Image (tube, rainbow, N blue to C red; front, side):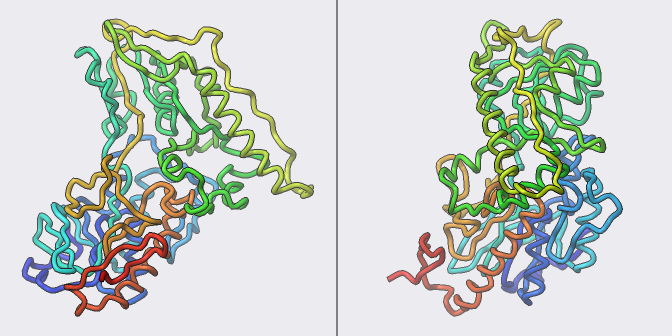
Length: 441
């Protein structure tokens, strides 16, 4: 049921802000806007926490420990701070958060268009049109699965699934399974499906390897404590690349297990290089697997060394740990038969992207990515939340989105105070050096 079931006629007025998306980022922004006395609504096409509710596999848990589940005005206070929430537990948390804060959420209100007309944003939805002085896009970074072009070359006898379609091994037909991609999603799929008794191959490209625990604490505890996760986006040498990096090979599990290519091999998973093409009914893999794994191992050692340097001299911390290099076969598999009695299912764990098909404001680059400077979009009064490496390395995590929401709502509040409603017909130009907007000549 719609939390704020206003009649369409009520939409005729102008409000300060429209927040699109009632996930953790949108609700965090709503909390802070309410505290600032800013009139706003939150528009959600489904239910609160919709992506966590409908587009996740059954066994999914957060990658961050419970104590890192933080939002403005909320900190985890349960009895399992070092555990990892299920997706449904997170949905319940978000529903309670919205209820306790009386968030003005309009559920089942799908946004079909966002346009800027005479200094105001006109937001068309399945329940009527809204007008606002500013808009926060908090619809998420994982609206669509990225599927490579090579998928069209697969034989018809091979079933293809994305992470949004996969639920559990029970839905898979008998036969081999190829998981393409070795990020957090890919390694979790490969592990779960292998444990269910399937013959699994994982195609590995660039990946980020790290242990779940190191020197007595969760690896994310150390990355946070050392300041790695707080690294500012303006300090990153190659920001575009940092925003495209795959998620770390981590899994949230009750036994706090380390999940990497070595542990997958122990499960019987065959590790291959990057999927390069499909020819004559066979999958073709890159021969560069050894180099790719060596680079991931090197980066992991550098991370652990940074932690060692941070805790140097503190005898209360357990000693440094060593982790084996990623094992690679002397002759890694280069070809794999598809269909028949071989690979019957391919799962594309090849990443996600946002969906801005409804955004009728010229702020997307040629690849469909939104142009923004730390969440300040290249259009007056337009903002974004919930993207990877948006302002810091922790932006993709819930507790990172909290910090981003503080920064964005502060900027937005200043924008609203600076650009009064009487300025609706004035044209402003974005100044990326500030960042901010300047009245055009």
